[in-house]
Length: 317
Image 1 (cartoon, one colour):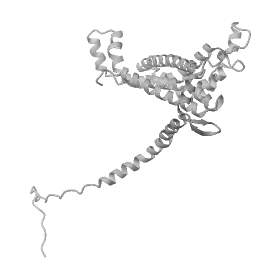
Image 2 (image 1 turned 180 degrees about the vertical axis):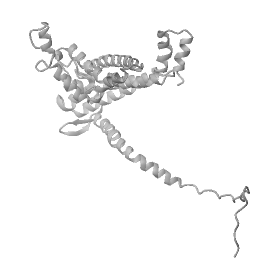
Image 3 (image 1 turned 135 degrees about the vertical axis):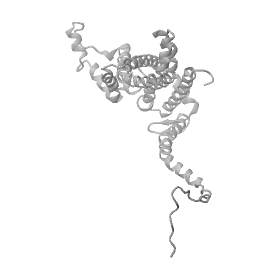
Image 4 (image 1 turned 90 degrees about the vertical axis):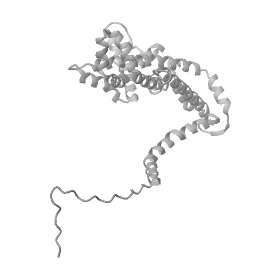
């Protein structure tokens, strides 16, 4: 019987024969795995996004009523009827006015709050939490809360003004066009300012501190640093915030439906609320409502494309 001795210490082991080529993985199997992972999301997008959009375009070209269903093709008449509707252009004007006011206030206040909570102070964590806390409340719930605050019967505004001697009776904050507009703007600013603060704060924290130090060494002042360093480097965050704010304002519905119902006298009627009224209240005409939805969709696409081109840093980007 032969005994195998271990190789002497320090001796190298004999070279091993090279391994053969690895067997390539089946590309079809990897493709099927990818489809399996993506199929749930694709199904959700198909059911809740693609199919409704296709159905809206079909309804926009049909004589489709709420109770009678599809009565046949009615393609040009739906769009002409929407453009000739007495509330269409007032709704367009008010929606654009509300969008401009809300965008300026939310972006400006959000940027100011982002600068405030960016500094390292003992109150930074508390302020961030306090400003962001209203975003945890749903928009419908916040609208009901403000509706109770504005109510002449149960709200605190009328008793406060009576104690101050400024009024002798109930005060209807939502009873005038300007009051209804600015009361709703106050709700939106309270609800969303913290959200835009968070978006812009992320952009501010992404700016390298070396850039500010180099600017200060070159003698740049606070105004020059803000205009020539902070704003240019903050453009991506500003672009995202502006697009989200404009899109959300153009599609405003919940707050106006709960607070004003489009009143007084249709002065706070938004385009989305007009879509709801055409479909379920005044006309009950699904075809006209779908035609207006298509108009709003194309307007949003055009506005967002223009915003993206304007917010780019250079034409070649």
